[in-house]
Image 1 (cartoon, one colour):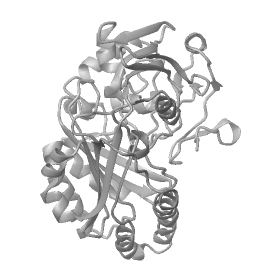
Image 2 (spheres, helix red, strand yellow; image 1 turned 60 degrees about the vertical axis):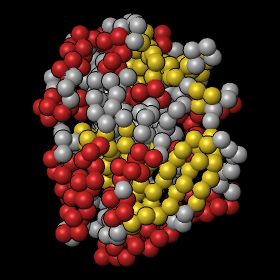
Image 3 (cartoon, rainbow, N blue to C red; image 1 turned 120 degrees about the vertical axis):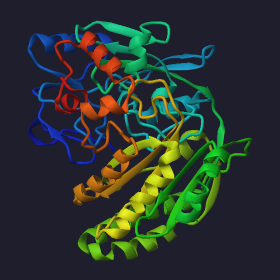
Length: 439
């Protein structure tokens, strides 16, 4: 399911269908050298440059009318270092391919987001994350990266080499250069036992701290218009492996989570008044289940129902209060919300523009089905999130600007100063970066 396929007449569209662009030209480099050459040529021709992955961002972070770099030839594993326990991959490698290749080698990432369609550089550059008590975002697992900068040079960055670039470029928003390769920390493959079960909204909010403390990976989905949630606890296990049976996996992950859910979205769009009733049925459709499998089989799930999303990180201590305010806002309004609200956590990290920079964080994500008006809901939700010092996900819908971020991120100035040094002529600019980073 790649959404990088261009539309008609050279128009590029993102996965959510809410962003499009018409680049002057597209380039598909097959090496860091070819990428550096494409960057130099763009500069000579007076064109800006953006790299695009699979288009899973809902913001226009990758949109350009200049040169669009498509990284699908920059894929594959360069090197596995079993002494250092790292893997170096080309930037355009899809997370799915990385996970499958690592599993064959008896290795695994420590944590993952909930889909694996994205490229490694697209996912890390926007701060994609899963949920974890001690383990952070995908970018927090980077130990080194290779960056093609505006003058066409190739920089290697790690804690030892160009450390100030490394501190920022792991979540670089495409503003500092174009990532050509990434080195991740890996570990021997392990098993996770997932325990999924329904739980009331009141109980999950009352016991949130306890559920977070007792589980390595805790998350839940709350169904608006109901008092119901579906919780998921993932913890390391000694085994044995007990994956979800194929028939049950198809029934629950494909038929219920994608097929029936898609039908419910269509029904809700046709008759918005029916949404609360549909939500009550949906919230009861998934029964409790426990299974044990290798990490990526547990962390990720297929997402075939297209949607638009806003997600904010708030301090972890503010999650319950923020969520309760969101619930009472929806209950008081005439909004009809057919998509569950997703809640996850991450530990503080040291990446300049990470949504978890310097603070333990909780993530609250709101969604609407593709094609449904979402502005009113998202605007009301954003008002609540920003009142709790929220930081929006860089790849998801939000209306914040550089002035807001300067207050939300203690190291914002450090990032923009580095950008001034690495890209003084703004070769990598676009409208989105102008808004969130300023000029």
